[in-house]
Amino acid sequence: MDKQDAPNKPISFFKKLGPGLITGASDDDPSGIATYSQAGAQFGLATLWTSLLTFPLMAAIQGMCARIGLVTCEGLTVTLKKNYPRPVLYIMLLFSFPAITLNIGADIQGMGAVCHMVFPAIPVSVFCVGITAVMMYVIIRFSYKKIAMILKWLCMSLLLYIVVPFMIKQNWGDIAKHTFIPTIQYNKDFFSIIVAILGTTISPYLFFWQTTMEAEDQAHNGKGIVVDKRVLSEMKTDVNTGMLFSNIVMFFIILTAGSVLFPAGMREIDTVDQAAKALEPLAGKLTYLIFATGVLGTGLLAIPVLAGSQSYMLAETLGWKAGLDKKFSQAKPFYVSIIFSLLVGLSLDFLGVSPIKALLYTAIAYGLTAPVLIAMIMHIGNNKKIMKEYTNSKLSNILGGLTLLLMTAAAVAMIWFLF
Image 1: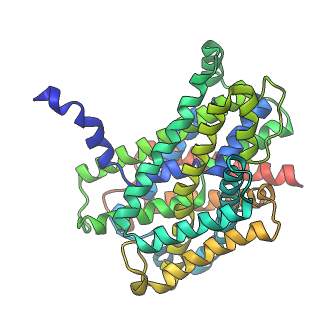
Image 2 (image 1 turned 135 degrees about the vertical axis):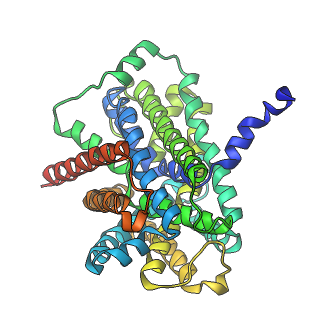
């Protein structure tokens, strides 16, 4: 009996995972892949250790967001609106909306460029339009349950990046050294890439998405406002698994670029398609195709999360009916805002906006809002009036405080480097 059940355990475990896995995996979007590839190409294995740093920090903040969603059964925007001055919320939205839209645009452009690289006869713009149309159809046509299932399976595309380094001869002793012993180079370029990695992994839109999805998951599963140790334990497992998965993938992307592109003298990777293209002559066509396929999978996963988080934020602020489980006719403003954000993101390609510039502006906006949002999330997490007996643990507060300090330092460093 036990032997028969054993093969089903991984499947059963995967089925229990939900918002945490999707949130973590969506963090490794095409723009994130470009950042990690640049880190590896520019500094070799020197930034591998950052994955050990970002995992507990991500897990702590996303765990707080998930608990807020479970306990309040409301999105983060609603909680902010109810308990904090309105100007604070509006400032967050003012910075978040352009950043998310630029992020969507950069991801669509990245996916289009990778498709064009594989099928050069078809222009990038045609692929961008097709990708956007597919995104709209899936989000409008399918229910929350169906979309969640699709997103969960798309998470598996990230496993491709774990395979790639094993297709190349590696010095695992050197890899272990750079993973567990931090390497710090005291120059502007190195600190810039560290700031970029922090901004890419700890992104404000994920805070909103995680909170809303936990609340929506509760409502969808009929759990209502019942929160107990079992529900919290399942949430922690889901979030920790998602963040661990995200950071493992980040580690292997840096490793791939650091062990292939850096030794070959390729120091500049501006776009994700450049990273994929550079691998072909150095590591073989199969490696290049696997890397490119992963970009498409992560883009299809991340764009609905980006567009969805922005629309939830807007709907919760303005009091619209919202929910991916609702039909278009039941929540028209919500779905129209999703369509609008996708079209604006798509238009960046036709307006000639460079994806690199889009990512730079995104990083600036995320960098400025992240410390403020983290401080507010920690305040909510320790507010007994809101969280009742489910306030933050001492460990959560320590990790949250460390995240706040690092993200504040990253924001100051980013402004310093820019000006």
